[in-house]
Amino acid sequence: MDEKKHTIVEKNFDDRLKHAKSKTKHSENNKNNEKELSGKQLGFRIGTELIAAVIVGGLIGFGLDSWLGTKPWLLVVFVLLGNLAGLWNVFRITSGEGYKMGFKGKNLN
Image (cartoon, rainbow, N blue to C red; front, top):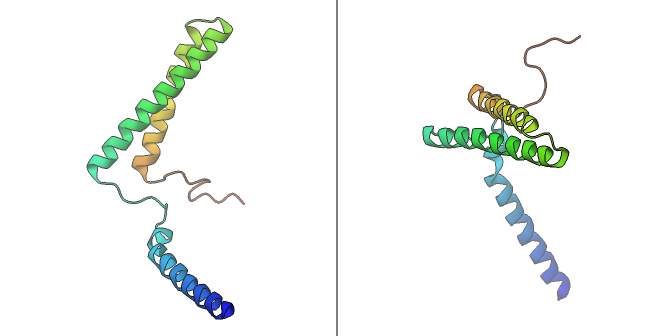
């Protein structure tokens, strides 16, 4: 009796697993694994990337300045690096490259 119940549960699980995998096929076919963003979503993401990068750079600079006693030089340097990182992220978002690795169209041989 237990063997019959066990095989029925396994078949049911296999069917549900196949069904779930078929639902997620569309995400695997997307070239960058990123969905297309609307204008509002893209603007919000760009603003978030810029603000987050500057805040993280500022916090790192402030922490290192407090620890090493070099106020305000490392804060200035890391805020500038945060700005550069934020602009680089915006460039990657708007160019459609995403977070892919490697060179595009270069023959390295």
